[in-house]
Image 1: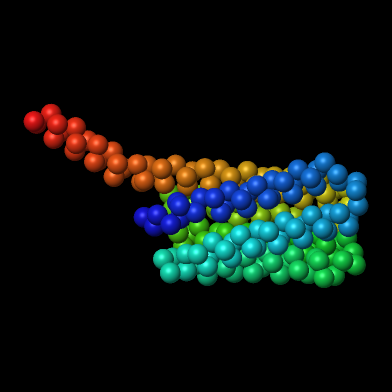
Image 2 (image 1 turned 135 degrees about the vertical axis):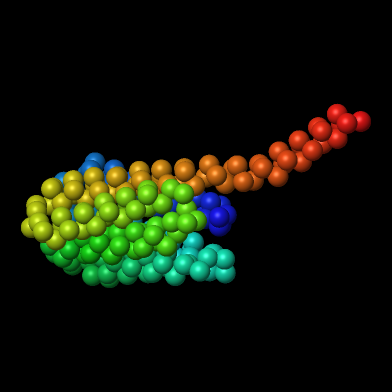
Length: 199
């Protein structure tokens, strides 16, 4: 078991919080216009991408699959940069950009889960998040001409579901980490009790 996976439970937790915040805001202000949605997506993609890259770089020496979260981060940052540098994007192009980001991110999440299935006991949460992202991406490409209000609702619901799944993954990752860290102390305490009893 690669304990670095469990010590980094806060990475998917932060990704989940960012996605959840993005989704809630998108649902709360759906009529504010596509420009606000564009800025929200840019912040969401950039922050999520930066977190993925930080996690990948931190574990590059202990995790042979570190390049997968690195690639996930690069994709997120690229999507965010496009949204920032081309603020004149039409709603259609914005929707397709969000859909493409979800599709690629979903595929990479599934690839990470498959590669780590022997090290990660709760990989099904990452698999499910990847599947949800791919389904959302396909939905966007199948119905790209939805109105701005419908787009905001669909994106918001997707982001909330993704955020909840990532937070659940982080919570499940954190549990074994606590047990691993407590185990040596418990063994030492048990040994000391047995020694005291023998005397």
